[in-house]
Image (cartoon, rainbow, N blue to C red; front, side, top):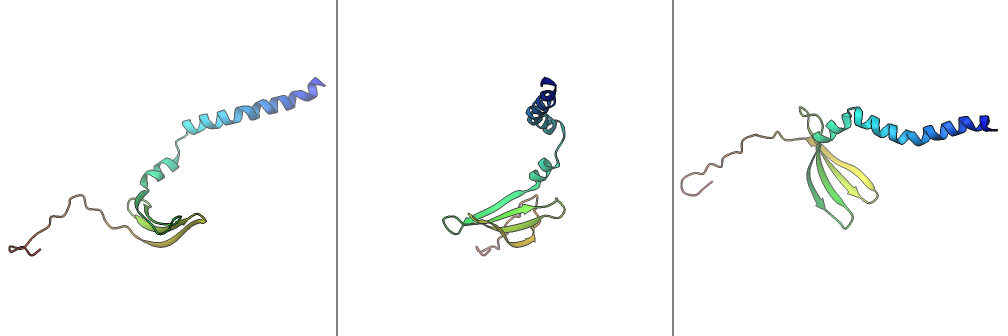
Length: 103
């Protein structure tokens, strides 16, 4: 009887150790998902109802950024529009004014 239970007991011990093994492996193996999430950027959000929002996010690799306009509601997320992200300038533009107060 005890020889028949040995494989079952070993299997249960292996199942109990599985979550610890997975957590250890997640810490040891570098994940590409971490680097992808750094590249995504929240741009804006507008509430259009009590449970609806229009959200704009910037996604994609650095050389080919895309803005996604998403409709977010309790029932789901829907892509409303996509466009190329505008190029960001590292230096702010100076506002030039004409003498006499006209800009």
